[in-house]
Length: 271
Image (cartoon, rainbow, N blue to C red):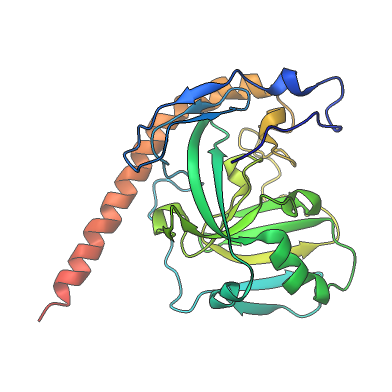
């Protein structure tokens, strides 16, 4: 379970009581057998039943995945190379129960993630091939989405390369075949359908420097409500929250279309 954070030295004048909300008893509403539990919710977050599918393209189905998926490592490592995802099985495996906090204001609780601690993967696979000091990492998904994270944040002990959710392999809805999970940062950091990690010696420039509303905070820490780099978190709550329901409907429609297409393909392959 995610532990309560202490005072953050990077937030001047704020102590833990300023960012902790009152303890709440969460009733199981998702039908997946999650036990009732007390959780500490970050400022402005509200629990939802289940674990909705959100992302940068909720109107589109999950991306196609190669038959033999791999993680491509590039950037400040000399030559690029790829690691078959099956190699993750050779690293120590962990199970963690964490919360997931979307920047729009909803939280899913009691999620049991399984996989490899990212710091373990980094030290075993990436660090030996570094050719210069590293400050940031970019995580790219098969859907084209990219999140950029400070090295120190990525090496936190609760950040995972997740291969399982609730004891089962990840489904396309939640980021199969593997995804990043960073519980103390907003969900937009946790890239789904992870395809590659790029290593940087400085923070890379944004691909779309003029978008304002969707600009990500460089730290995205949930307990400091770092929803946006310029505007205060409480203001962004009011902007994001009305988008939750329509986004959820778009996501549900895309999954329905994908399921229908899969049934059509299966039907066409019958003798």
